[in-house]
Image (cartoon, rainbow, N blue to C red; front, side, top):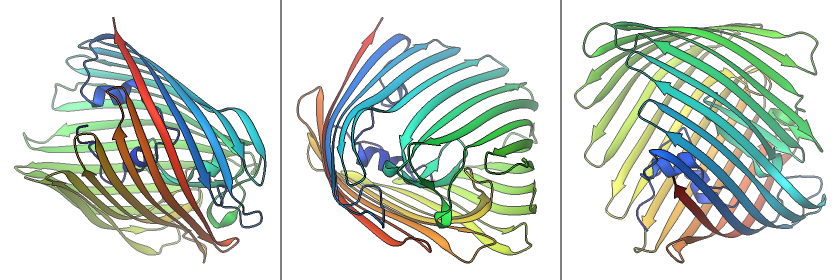
Length: 429
């Protein structure tokens, strides 16, 4: 088995590779692994798994061990040409769960995603839509790649997330280019309790966003990007909608070994105006990459926070190391309240031999409201042994430790063991 590339913070995809208890391969992943996708490609994936945890839902009131057996299935269709890409993915799992709160058998975590991209010499069009259901007991704190923010939600409920977006850019081949975008994000909860930061309950929400952007090539190595977005946030628990205007400004300068950047962003919310600025630098070196930025953010209440990030990827003879640390001030995706997020991640991938590898991943994150006195912390440690059983079947065996802490529930922990085998079938026509 070849090396599996681990992506650096903040995307946290190393944990998706490590956990693997119910994840399924998609056509997008296959394309990233270098499989030729020109023409039509049809893929089917199967993941059979078993897992036991000491407190799966991280419930302080009803702790107890749980066991689950799952059969996750996926299907993906991809059509790709030199100028167009159309993908359609389906996924879900049959599961039997025995836990202190319920004995649940049936179909869970369904997902569907459709995307279309078209490129020409001077324009780009992107359309996408998705629907996904997730058991909050399986989630906790994750990094949302769509909003580029941390999302914390836990409990016994199921969350249905619906996303739709469209983006058009033109004049890509000219010194001055423009773009427009629109998106819709909706979150709904059913069948249990859903809580966020500080243990407060989560309501069904919707966020609609429209935006415009401009790009100016100052010279061959310098580029200025300006964007203006408007979003409206609707919460079923509040009668009044919340409107937000965001102005972003970024100057990027290409250097021989990386990029130098300057950023200035202004966000006008219902609670006040937030201003942030940062200077950043990325460096490529023979054994990896290093990128970071440092800046400051003035919250809606006028308090100044030091913000920044540092991401490191270091290649080893038989693996790699990743490290990330970040602090940011933004609006919560699920509640639209201003929050401070601080996180530290670590990952180590080691190739034992041509058939097996070992990965260790750790994450610690803290979320707190800028107007509150308490915070919510989440930590996870996962160790996974992976082995190629046959050219088509892979096995993952691992242990994990999860922990959360807030002012309402105190500290809650869970330990678990998981085992799964997976296979993906690919055909091209």
